[in-house]
Length: 290
Image (tube, rainbow, N blue to C red; front, side, top):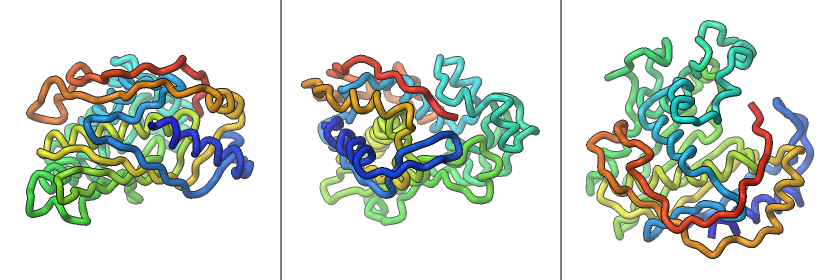
């Protein structure tokens, strides 16, 4: 159950973390933590001690898969998780005065689909430019002769373009492994994890991605291994998380289903997917940091 792994992380940060004054506030932080989640039989590790907005999470993932870097597209789908980082004030604070408001620079989607292509604007056509890492994953995983490779890696961390991004990637690297029984697992490395708000989304997002790739490549999803470098809790999230720890996980087993296949990953919409048997508790409100 996802809640048990997550609760161990929360409790460890609360018990062992040290207070650090960081870029965007005071956090209690530990360094180095690993969680494991079961994806077999279409399982989806969504927290049940609070409601995870899985549709918002999935919309963001599909935005990555389209190679998109425009916050305008997310806002059109009522997704506002990048709003603070896409503001004029924040972009200017990063020295990105040349970018229009809501242009996030060469963030995740650009690196996933057009790695290191010269970035101009979020509206530029990058077709055929840079390295399409997602297509590389599909090609390697679809081929029985290459799916055992130890080089099936997706990286969002590009030192050449970090300073052009509104926000350097937090979940920056994942590696995929296929077992002898054709089961696909993903290992995610995250340099920085906002335990209260971000981490539950990251768990869900890479679980979605693993299921989607498994289906596309004729495999079955197996495991998500999630490694976090700096796992931290913001000072104003502490009490909310302590209350969340007291809640009993809901007795349910959420699962993920693709109900409409698309020829191209870029064409998927959130309505092409279903999450079944998810019975979460109430939303736990915490302030989001830019």
